[in-house]
Image 1 (cartoon, rainbow, N blue to C red):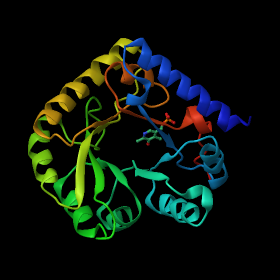
Image 2 (image 1 turned 135 degrees about the horizontal axis):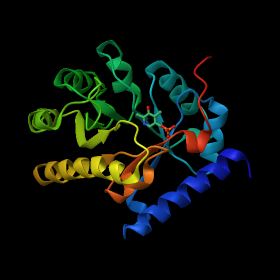
Image 3 (image 1 turned 120 degrees about the horizontal axis):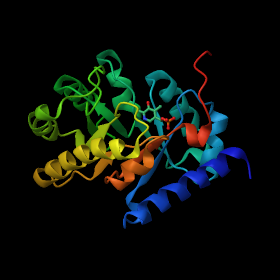
Image 4 (image 1 turned 30 degrees about the vertical axis):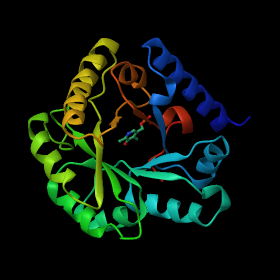
Length: 234
Ligand SMILES: *Cc1c(COP(=O)(O)O)cnc(C)c1O
């Protein structure tokens, strides 16, 4: 077994153990493999190990990989998630190529994705990004803005509001990770209450996935633990 297969298996076991540890079903937690900066060969290894859902942060890099795998037999049924900050001038590529976008933080970008989603494709699945703990970060809305944005986004026909996403400020302490993730889970339950199609809470990365699952995450976004450390110098 190669390294990526082994790492994927380890991550899946950690997800299963974390879910069982809090009396949740392992299948309630989707594993999104974050492949940003990684070559198609690494993604192909993950596909061979059974991984179907991949997350990319940079629009053009993601589109190149989507197009590469679209022409290959092993690329059938892959699900591509855009998880990076989205600028207006790149929204068309996301609308045309991805199945999900996790980083909706303003109505204008949701409207553009809605207008630009090709009619032959199913609606784009979107998550609203919440700035839950990191006051420095400019990504995401504050929770008080959620009801109005969610209502407006949910009304757009070519995108489907599936839930919420957050990238909390880095925090080593498990209990403090939990406090932040629980705030997200409360917001998720409130949103679900008004929008029955909402089913996805995207939170948890390599260093905080166990706390995220304990707090109710339904989708963890894991890069380093699967593909190894990233090299941004190239
Ligand atoms: C890079 C990235 C991840 C993966 O982080 P790791 O710590 O490598 O698991 C998850 N989510 C987002 C939004 C990212 O940009």
